[in-house]
Image (cartoon, rainbow over all chains, first blue to last red; front, side):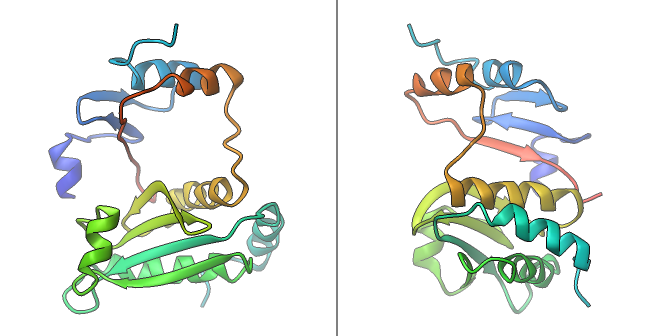
Amino acid sequence: MDLSRKYHVTGVPKTVVNDTIEILGAVPEAQFVEAALGGEPADG
Amino acid sequence: MGLLSASDEAVLKQHLSAIDANVSLLLFTQTIGGSEAGPVARQVLGELASLNDKIEIVDKNFVLDTDDKAKYGIEREPAIVVLRNGEDTRMRFLGAPTGYEFVPLVEAVLLAGTGNAELEEATVSRLAGVTTPVEIKVFSTPT
């Protein structure tokens, strides 16, 4: 419960990446990867 | 009484037959004053492990096993650490993996046991280029 409060989880699934990026709901794989790696430059 | 029906067990057993590596599930619980989810997690893991000889449960004491807590970064209980042939897969589960959380547990065990993530080719090459640690927390509910 403490974690869900800390990360303001009001609906699931909710994904939190590196404590900063939030992804709500179930999203397509490619979209999820790009959202999760938002701060990471693409290879090449 | 078991949590899984006989037909669920049969289906699961077939899925789990793909496992070719040893999967250890380290379960951290606190016996006295711990979460009521601890015994539930123990039962779920027990039923899962009974379906395949390559899956083992290793009980860890959340209060006493401080070295392992530090090693695996465990700050809450119950917590499950998934190992593949004794190596940390870095997959963790917090709370009791019941209801809708049971399938992700099975998927994690399959991933650890087969090494097959079943990701799209583009995803695999994208992930190969990641150079900094990425911590992903997924929140779900059992119902």
